[in-house]
Amino acid sequence: MDQFEVPAIVPADANANIADLLVERVKATPDRALFAVPDGDSWRDISAKEFETQVIALAKGFVAAGIEPGDKVGFVARTTYDWTLVDFALFYAGAVMVPIYETSSAAQIQWNLADSGAIAIITELADHTERFEQARAELPLIRSAWAMHAGALDALVAEGASVADEEIVRRRQIANGSDIATLIYTSGSTGRPKGCVLTHSNFVELARNSAKSLHEVVEMPGASTLLFITTAHVFARFISILTVHSGVKTGHQPDTKQLLPALGSFKPTFLLAVPRVFEKVYNSAEQKAEGGGKGKIFRAAAKTAVEHSTLLQDGKKVPLGTKIKFALFDKLVYSKLREAMGGRVKYAVSGSAPLGPRLGHFFHSLGVTILEGYGLTETTAPATVNTATKSKIGTVGPVLPGVGIRLAEDGEIQVRGINVFKEYWRNPEATAAAFDGDWFRTGDIGSFDSEGFLTITGRKKEIIVTAGGKNVSPAALEDPIRANPIVGQVVVVGDQKPFISALITLDPEMLPTWLGNNGLPADMSLADAAAHGAVRAEVQRAVDEANTFVSRAESIRKFAILATEWTEASGHLTPKMSIKRNVILDDFAAEIDDIYTVPVSTTTTSLG
Image (tube, rainbow, N blue to C red):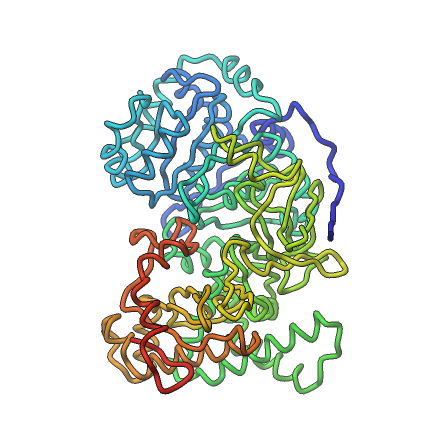
């Protein structure tokens, strides 16, 4: 059994809680800009001391409103400065936040609030409030509902003006390391969401040790980041706490359509993103170049970038010709992409799904080192991560200090350490099933190299076994296909079938640009595009490329392009944009049957 375990760098403090991280930051650098908020076309800094002052004022409001230590409070909001303000105000008041995805339906909001036993909720937008109100009749425990769009935070601050400072000091010191810090519900990709009980120690010890491992990232002069992925997810939630601990200036941009302008004005030094964001940046740049008649130059630049980075990682000498091409493309292409991201980005932390070597090497040649990591809600986010000095593109890095990972006989990744959650809320059966002793069973399959770098190869429950007995990991095929600009999502199928096939959707954002660049009507409907020969040929090209990574028995023989889109609203994606595979297999069972029953004249045919 492969096993790698790294001792914690920072001694554990059983009495420390998350509020202590802000207290320590204010004591160390009271005047350092800890946040920046939009101010016209620029940004206004908020110092560590100013942030804590606002946190205390809001915490007093929660106290005055009757929130007691240990009370659960639901929170539905986008990724903004106010999210972290509310988060720390609840910590200072001794309460426990139950974050809810901003895209959650009324039924999902009802489940999270009812299952957690929440007695209050905070909503940001009118739409969030409306969805809560649809479920309110089924939530008898909710006695307070605060709507931020109606000025609730200011009202709470005013209400708490008479609460003594000493009461907040008392409350923020009540929790110790083993106490519950937050209750985060899983995304529900494999069933009803389960509440993960994450403790103060999970966040405190992981933040302190991660800051040491990633000190080049979080302690570089002028370190800053722009958060845009949802802070309701554990990945961004952990980073938002890590940045407070490390003194990193943080901005927020909840509207990803405004991401590029925000990057240009904020100029962060590192980013936090999921692979789909990097795919979008690459694909948008490629299609823009194509539209300007420079597609050939961009593709040559991309090929050179990947080749140059791969040679450097492998420790091989870069040929003179490649050096010359790289220098030329750096002026023509790479420098412009760097500027589009603000011009100062040195690192990008990627998680939630596999990135793939191609994008990793491409961005590396831009001067952006992508530090891919691995973790789950149950591991408070990162269990492994590539670092500035110990990194291999295509892997999710070595284990973090304080964390141990072993591979079971079937290759399942199991984790123990400072980051592993306490239990599933009110679900002892699920908790017992999730552990082997003190090792958490992740359900993911992976492998280590000789230096302890972990590679994720798939999900245990998603392994496809064909009628011929061949085991196939869908991710190995899905990720390369999804990299194509016109592809939205992919689900590989073939369990107990004679061959592997796939269901594919088109990307409605990128499709019009691609159609225009290829002399086709940009306003073509998804249904017409799915049946169009040029579109089918482009998808075929993506499938053929993916097939080069696997054996003949594992390759996709047929695929269907669907005339629809998979979204969270349609019930086919989780809030973090992961595929709900079982739902898709059920909803599109007829299309899958057609793949295996409709006769075709070629080995790989798209069914529009």
